[in-house]
Image (tube, rainbow, N blue to C red; front, side, top):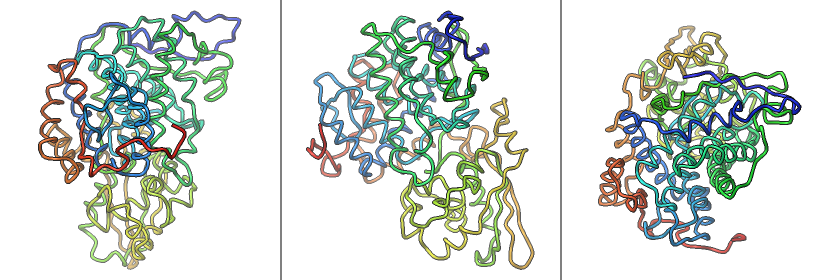
Length: 502
């Protein structure tokens, strides 16, 4: 591992491309590396995870609409779309668009948190789509996705986007482009150009995760994946991109991030190192923003000590800066207290989430967000008694450089009207690698079964799980079968329509 320093240089300094971050990323993506068995096993887990959450969301409006757009772009040697038959293929970028939206809709796949936020499994849909369309091998796709994880996690460790209200998909564009470049075995200069272009076109603001949160939150990573495919295609045709995209005097850092005096340190593997950053990421057991995962588990534990919820006078959650300001009362968003708010907003309100988890003792990807559940009078009363406060110790744990010591939880004090109180704390979610019940393959499959029950057939379940768990041995043509099919009678928007332009 080496630390690469990134800062702004005036144009007259003519920074050599070999010293630029985009080149360093491309160098990693174009260099052979040893495949780590544990990393491959985790990759299989995440492919199972992605498929399960995608099928659970398959008929939700944003997913159905993304699919209906993609169905307008068939291709004989293309890529598959979740829910559709495996013999129906579509343009890779549109497959990535539909599948990326399906994976992200329920906010229930994997996460990595550090200087910024990320969902590294968002790399899988575009890389898988390109592998299917370009008839690549299982080894190629493993290499491509492992690179995607490696680059995204390195960027998330080193460069904070949210401080400047730039959405985290700005790290996803370069990571997906580098993963696709690795998949295709492209030359370093081609990947370098693709990475730069992918960053240039994926810098968007965090308004997609602020205020009245819309369905774009689910579309945003799919948009980055689609653009990364187009960026690689453009570079393969010999086109150059804005350069240096990170370090230039009018670059992303200079005008969107810390400015001309900004300096970042990005930890990158040495060329030839074993790549295993995927092992540092963690999935979600509950369908909600990651920083709520541990607090949901804590609510389940604390509810056992409460006789009557009406006796509660207030609840204070002491937590990290990120949790307080992004999903807590520090955000200043009144929508986070609104019983009529969208599902996308509610899953970014720790006050709502903690109230429901405390009352119900469960978290369900559908039931916990139903309007009638959110608007229940006793729930609204409890919800509005919950506040968050930043605690410096929890902020320090959130940013700890040792992955085994990082924490994303908090301490909760529940005050009762009679003057008594109870308190408890939790550092990481139960499902976290350092948690009480860390997720293993059996847990991923259990989650998969719960999410797909009643949507896919038992035969389809077995076919997919048997196939994906043998990923390293699959033949090229079998990669087009790494898709979950739904009976068309159960699938909304299962054929091309004419509501839009396409």
